Image 1: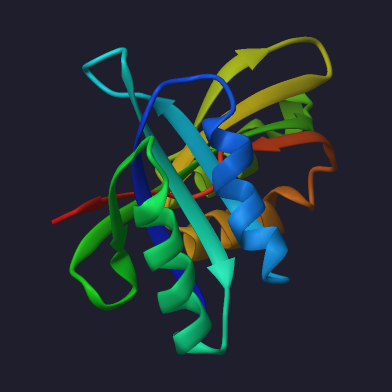
Image 2: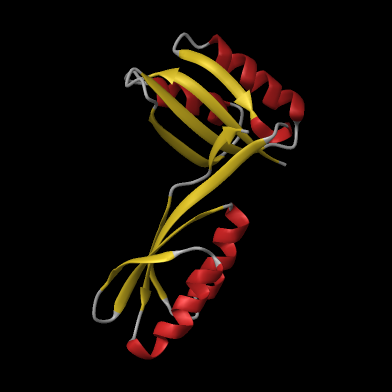
Amino acid sequence: MKHTISVLVENKFGVLARVAGLFSARGYNIASLAVSETLDPQISYMTIVVQAEDEKILEQIEKQLNKLIDVISVTDFTKREHVERELVLAKVNYSAKQKTQLEKLLNKFLAKVVQRKEDTAIIEAVGEQEQIRQLLEGLAKFGVKELVRTGKLAISA
């Protein structure tokens, strides 16, 4: 089961390494990690997605996170009401003949072209991970040249 965890931390050197180290020390790979400052530049917000079948070990990780001096709070969104989104930028092959077909696909997923050059278009989309997956399947028909993703972001509802 995938768990989405938020960790509010002091924005200091080495905090990210210590947090990530707790997961790797217990053999868990972080599937997604997004970190940024909050409204207060001295505090950062981490959204971590980890695949964990053993709930007890995940509880231990949460307890260990809470023991770190720089950690302010830990929230497991897995069983809580929350909103989650991911941002993706994709560079795809583009031609004038494909314009209508591409626009139809983008409208379906509320995505947009943020830059267009002679033979490429850069697409921006924000949505739930399943929506992003479906969009990328559709964009594959055009030929995806390059792809970057933020990973999951989550906030309590």
